[in-house]
Length: 265
Length: 265
DNA sequence: TTTCGAGTTTCAAATAGTGGAACCACATCT
DNA sequence: AGATGTGGTTCCACTATTTGAAACTCGAAA
Image (tube, rainbow over all chains, first blue to last red; front, side):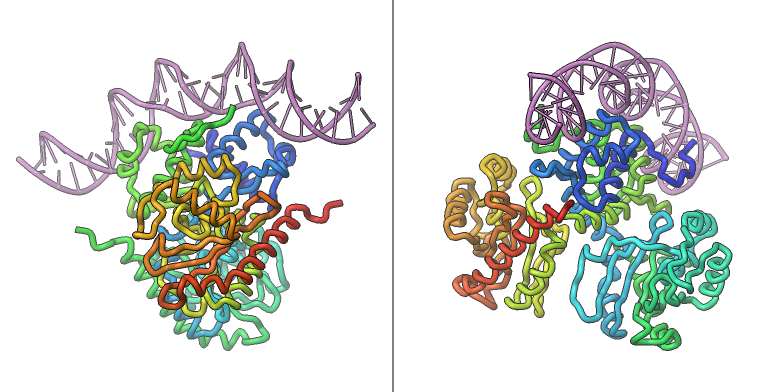
């Protein structure tokens, strides 16, 4: 009765195809020629053409007539801004992240899970002030990041399995957990400990301690992490951040939960 | 052969409708119930339902089964991030904005024009941030902001007219230019001067000096502004920022231009 | 001038979207 | 309990929309 799992994304209807085109453009990473899109896409010329037309005059794509290239449009940025603001997590979490970053003196990340991928929705760099899209919106793998594992550990059975299925288990570093089995074992430990580590599993020299954010028992809505480098701290030292990290994560969870039940009449 | 100006947005095809739904959800500003969407929309129940379904399992909307509400999805954030990064303006401008904000010691905004609206794509906060609305992705009116007027002044005839048509000319403050005539006169002056002021036209107490960013003569790609409050500076003092502002705007323009012609084979 | 490739338009066929109405589940009245 | 209501989901015949092969246009290269 509904669409089945299909890794390359089940393209439901015209809308699905249109959105696929957006992804294509995004994947290109730079303004694209129509012809380039065409050969990357399975759609026939005319179809793709009309699709791109539509997206363009909807502001989802921007056409540069001089260069004859398409890029993602500003409407996306506008929508994303609203998405961010209306999220029950990121805006609520902001003040807590501020103090946590201040206290720890290290970089703090706030992430959510989206179809098996970690997506960073906020970041506070200890030294630098506010950075918006430079980092927010960035995606990363779930199986080899602190936030990713923290979320996986606490999400429901089915969701977790689905997410794990989507992991690539590419060994970014020697420390990467490169199989579902290793990952599952790690997740058990994380649940037992209440926090997750990234032991240089994604990038050499980068370590972090992460905790899940629960809006209510069993409902993971994100994760929080304190990241540092091996040059500044050892893994063992990271545990010192635990109390503050957990406190912040819990506070955010509670705040987000409350936010969902605004004092209505 | 092409679409004409149509304030309520010409909904081309199913894709258009789908995107309209996204806007609806965005406009709501918080998670929406299906029924709420329904009465706000002109579409019949079943149609809206399927549309929302599609958008949801495409990740453009996120459904909260517990609360039975829809919110904008993370896929948008992901796409917007890419949009930002692949833009020829924002990423290129960043370093220049950094030094400009540093030099001036005031808040710097980078904006672009999107269908008659100003959309802020980056922002550097001064050490002591001023209370005001603004953030990346945030939109604002063109006719009563420094960046907006700077861009209007330098864009082509047709584009400008189209943009001006879309302005509301609501008088936010006594200083607001509340008619096309006043605005056009101001634009002439801006062209003559090479910079634009915001004389508390949008928010009382907030003033700024702005300059257009041209990638090549006659091609506005954005605008840059230095914002402050009347408590910190007078309008006359703002002119002192002009040299640095213009220098930065020109540098960004040149950099963006070069970026569009990457050293290809 | 001819050729070529990229981009744009046409048009009949049929797929995909539409929407009125029925349906279901659950909560709330009587 | 039974009746009533509300919000959400599904059906299905109708047709508007999308489709895509092919034809066309334009500019630049041969």
